[in-house]
Length: 356
Image 1 (cartoon, rainbow, N blue to C red):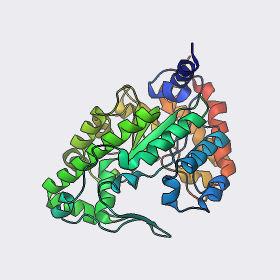
Image 2: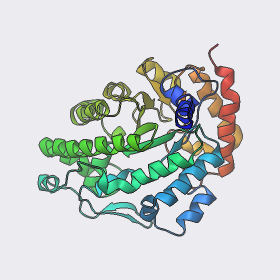
Image 3: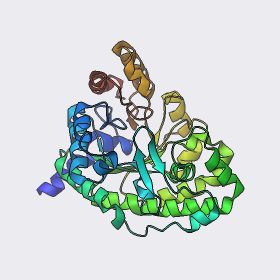
Image 4: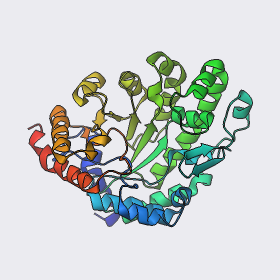
């Protein structure tokens, strides 16, 4: 077997990708959203020299922070360092990460005419720096460590584009959605088309799995999700490379799980607001699940981290298809030692719950 085929087989047989396929593993794979971030001194050192957008757009630096985090933590998958909002720039939206404010869209969408002015992203050339990073990271990672590519889901992207930044109640986005469903669907179609191109390009560049972050979709009730989101998400998942596993993640989505499952994704992300066993039972045996420790638990004494981690692993009960993760990303002030010990704990104890 040549080296390329050998590396490909190592990746295929990795615990993370086997779990995505709901195949038995010797250990529960674990990775953490935002595992390369401000809680880690190595990241802060790199970040002190450049702005956040400069870091995202520099393939060498994106490679450094991605690989450093994966290797230091000893996780079972790396995730591309980028941001879900990068895709908005090629569409014609003016994105800035303002110090102390987070992302700001300086020309937000407020009327149907604003949707009409958006550009279509028919190819991924404007985001080639992301693909360069994917190729560089894949080359630098150990051959046993899969790389996860990702994008923001259309609903969450639409909310940022309409609100112009962060929001608590999404009143601008939701009122736009209710007031002008035609313009809303046109916007979602543009975002869906761009996301399909973007994610398939990441897979072609060397990502072994793809995650859709629908961080804000939990603001919707089931009926609104069916009407305004589900058709676009179903088309998106149907258009992704079928050989690349996909992870469908949202927060505060315990009322939407079955609807999310029906859209697609081999893996459904669960946040901490639902018991893992309850969520998995509702989803049924046809999907893997990812989750679902509350990120704030990592600020507490490790005895509590251990108790809750064992509870989650116990609910998974060693069934094939569980990927351990947080219910959302690591927070900036999280103690690094607790993160390192969490990874070790999952690896050391999960074999006791394997189905024999």
